[in-house]
Image 1 (spheres, rainbow, N blue to C red):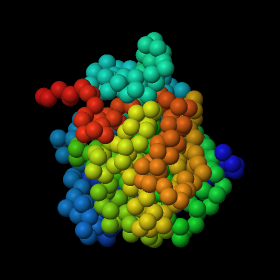
Image 2 (image 1 turned 30 degrees about the vertical axis):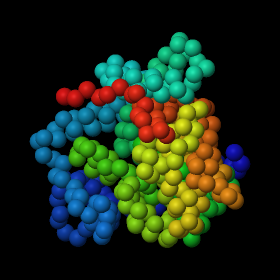
Image 3 (image 1 turned 180 degrees about the horizontal axis):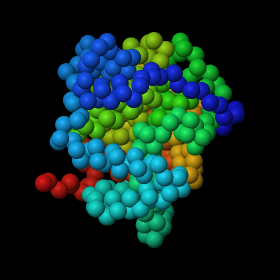
Image 4 (image 1 turned 135 degrees about the vertical axis):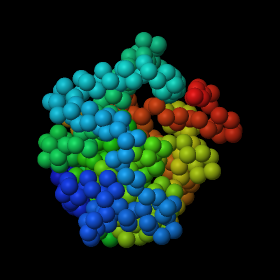
Length: 357
């Protein structure tokens, strides 16, 4: 990578802990704080899929277990970094023991991606992945509870100079092409410390954690956009925003093209050419990885559209860039999702079925 690591702090709205708690408890006293206004702007955007979404009072007795889990995570985050990572590794191994469905999916994905490994080597990688998943849970708590100062002390930022210039230009729209990793929540928080960027998000089924996580993501992002809200996405990019967008999940053939990913064609969301055509957005890859007990946020060189390229050609290059990065830290990629579930011939990859309760 070219250029020296740089620190670019993101200017996000500040609000007192008292006001932030009041917002999440459902209190509505006095004029809205900047943070409260930000949430209302997210949930009441005209024409948005979020228009009917409201933050429920999270102090209800039904959420006591959720608060206890958050409290336990807060306690673990107070440990030294080495102890946090050790605890996370243990937690990940336990998680894989208790969730055979996710363990089997991860094992199937690793068999596809690394056919050259023998059984013992692949099992070793699966165990390392389990530990990384557990560390990611602890790192999610770090994203929620650690101060900017402490996070900056644990991380470093590297950037391609030309790509960084694009990100700093307030009139140039940029799609930060991201990927899913086991430390994604912390990675996005760290990215927000160095680069001003909005982010796409998909609602969670659990209402407590949906609003809790969205609350914390809003501290890192200049704006949060529902993944189905194309009108909001286009307006944000037209205004010259930087938008983090992870394209490495199978969202179905209707919105995808099939391009190789670790040697097997995978449904790949083909939104990049459309966003470039509509807004002139540049494509800049960004990666967040764990290196020992520290972290790196790395902005890579711009992916430029080549003359005559099809959508499939573009996603083939994007997937190749993903793959090259993931091979450097294979245990940290999010192998738990069904990356190859839709096949080009219309069939489904034989992942295990989730047990119905």
